[in-house]
Length: 202
Image: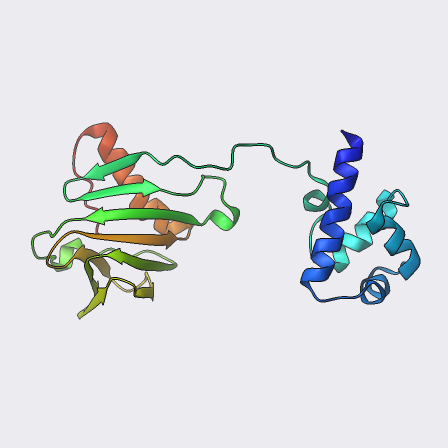
């Protein structure tokens, strides 16, 4: 097990270095090690010591915890369950532990009655969505924007907003930050539990 973690650490060091486009010399200069020492660490010809890992992690702009954490053997496949309110079904496509608190969801919508000012949501952050099929009507304050399949939209959620299907069923894939997930996705889950509509505006 210790050897496996050691191998993962070496791969991470090399991978992060290459992702930054750095040579061994460039990383070595940043973490105050010789290029030959760094090369032996990466190739497994030398065990990496804790006092070497700290400056390496700092130079690679990561944390020591991230550099040495064990490889996660959790099932990487997500099997989303549908949750819905009248006219809207949501499949959450990311885990609750997603980095940065970002949530990804697919939504299927059917046309709804006219959205009024009281139906618009406001919350901190930004949202992004891609229309997978159909046409979506995005209302941002007084503006109404039609977004057809294959096009995407990104907007500040501090602007009162709502997303509805336009002229027929539509499917979108959305990315929410933590505030958007709390304002929208949790409403749908609560509605499933209570059996009522939660007013999912976007």
